[in-house]
Amino acid sequence: MKDYIIRMQDERAKLETKWDKLIKYVGEHYDNLDGTEIYLMQQQIKCMEKYIMFLNARIDHAKLKEK
Image (cartoon, rainbow, N blue to C red):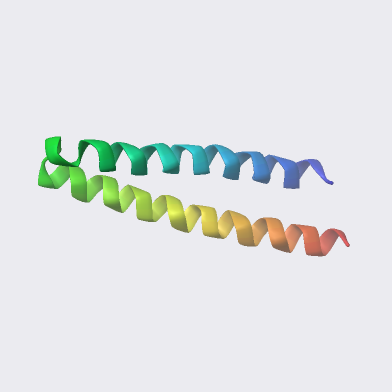
């Protein structure tokens, strides 16, 4: 597999780890967070999900091109 595909996969894996940790943090500390913090973290989670979605699409496309 090409290096650039591996780099995208590594980037996705790191982002998924951060995304998972943020979701867990919000769930575990929800009662201690104020409304603004909750809103901002939820927005960050949504952005991370979109980023993961686009990385997945780029990886799939790159793999297809390499065939």
